[in-house]
Length: 81
Image (cartoon, rainbow, N blue to C red; front, side):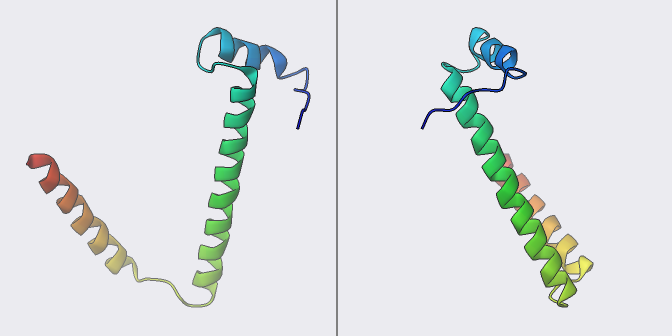
């Protein structure tokens, strides 16, 4: 599949390659598509989360904070090793 880069974006894409942030213009476009795909996936997860909350499937805040505190302690103990 071939596509044209809109003229507004050409200088940016060329600069990314010139600065060696990417090897080719195609790599720049591919990264943009990866980011768009990730954003769409995150948007879907957020939408699902709100649907679950609306259905009464939420987790009490105290439980969330307790789990977060436990996880933080676990990570800190692993770093101390």
